[in-house]
Amino acid sequence: MDSELKEIVDQYDPKLPLGHASTIPSSWYTNKHFFWLELETVFARSWQPAARRDQVTESGRYVTSDIAGEPIVVVRGNDNVLRAFFNVCRHHAAAVMTEAEGKAAQLRCPYHGWTYSLEGGLKGTPDFSGVCDFDRASNGLVPLELTEWENWIFVKVSRDPAMSLIDFLGEELVAQTSALQLTDLHWFERRHYHFDCNWKVFVDNYLDGGYHVPYLHKGLDSVLDYSNYMIENGEHHCLQWSPIVAEGAEAQTGAVRKGHRALYYWIYPNFMINWYDGVMDTNLVVPRGVDQTEVIFDFYFPDVVSEHARRQNLASVEVGQRIQDEDVAICKSVQRGLNSRAYNTGRLSVRREAGEHLFHRLLHADVTQE
Ligand code: FES
Ligand SMILES: [Fe+2]
Image (cartoon, rainbow, N blue to C red; front, side, top):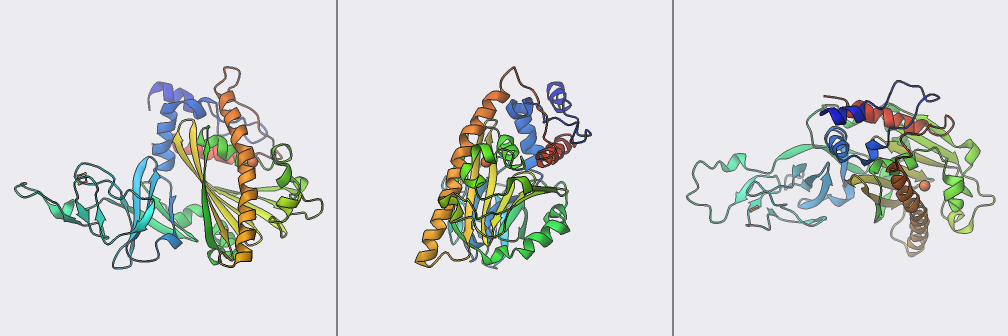
């Protein structure tokens, strides 16, 4: 790590307890060298959602994604085994699969037509006779680790650390999510949101323990019980939850946010599972640049087939959309402020912001590891 970067990293003291702690410094949100350090130490080394299970149920089904700046493809082989590869052609590095998802009999690179089997082996190399010492067997797509949990397929770009996803999540979180029977829910729709801010601004906003809800999200605020909003930190996750109140609910929100409680699980660093009485959406926060973030929302419901349910589901997605629209402007405003010479760090609310404190300490641990 060069000295300028080290100076930035060392500005944060992870040992201070919440009542004494400040946020991570603004340079962590604005410095592009720090951003690259995060791709390498936070994103490449963590299990990242790369596909939903429902997308790759049959042989030949594949999904492409971008993790820690790396092109990735997840594909089910003819042997029914699910595999992940770097989506990088061994010839001259073009992306082999260019659609977001689909079904293919083989994986064909669009550049010079090299083909790979669904199991990643190099098959066809047009006009390649006369090439000496070329070992076809060692020129298959480069594999990476893959694991499955609940409704998702996770991959890890780097071999280190070797911790399994289940060990990382921990027994408590695994038991809690298992009790919610998430795998009974069906995927309904995906929406992409673009935020003009660093990815951590979005995560901080999510983890502020409902602090911003009464001010920014009047509709959502009308169904949550703000004074009983709870924050529970695990080792690598934070659960925020709130009782749901029907009385006084704003009509549009109240119609689709029912039941007893709302659960908001954040899994370090960038995956969220939001659950309301048998309805779920997930957020995957994808860093696109030091001040550009894409958030991929997937919405799941118990019934995605009947006409009545579809109408209700769409109404629920629209409420989610409104909340995101309300967050887009504030995240942009925060990013601008983080660039100001007037700001470096801010203090944390002990009542509300324990999740952010956990997030910042985990980040510090990652960016300082060798
Ligand atoms: S880069 Fe893929 S075939 Fe040439
Ligand atoms: Fe919000």
